Image (cartoon, rainbow, N blue to C red; front, side, top):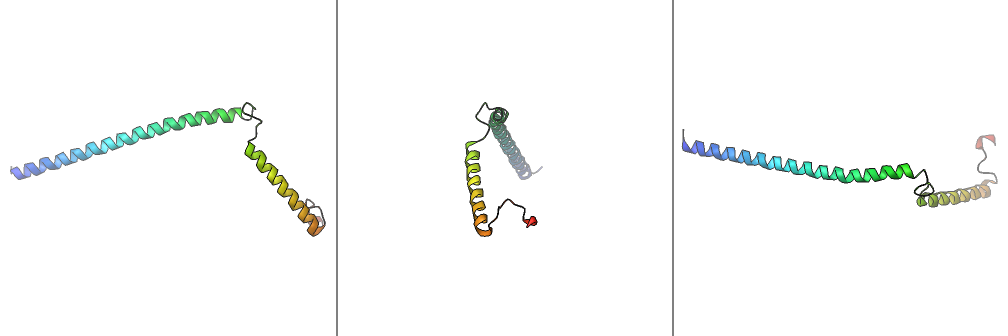
Length: 101
């Protein structure tokens, strides 16, 4: 066989082997990273499950979030303002069914 052919064949095989090693190492790195991410998320999921289980029971508070209470108060105030506007504009109870006029 020709030495040029053998050298080019050897270089080609070496490049392919290097490519396979590079691909396998990247694959292993990705798998390790994903495994680490799953472990980190697992801790958060466990904490969330405990919180969801204990919150309605009152172990973490009253069963409602402070933001929920604030939002409910704001919604209540807005409903009262709408009721007042409806009374001023139409002179009627805003909760009365409109079909019974």
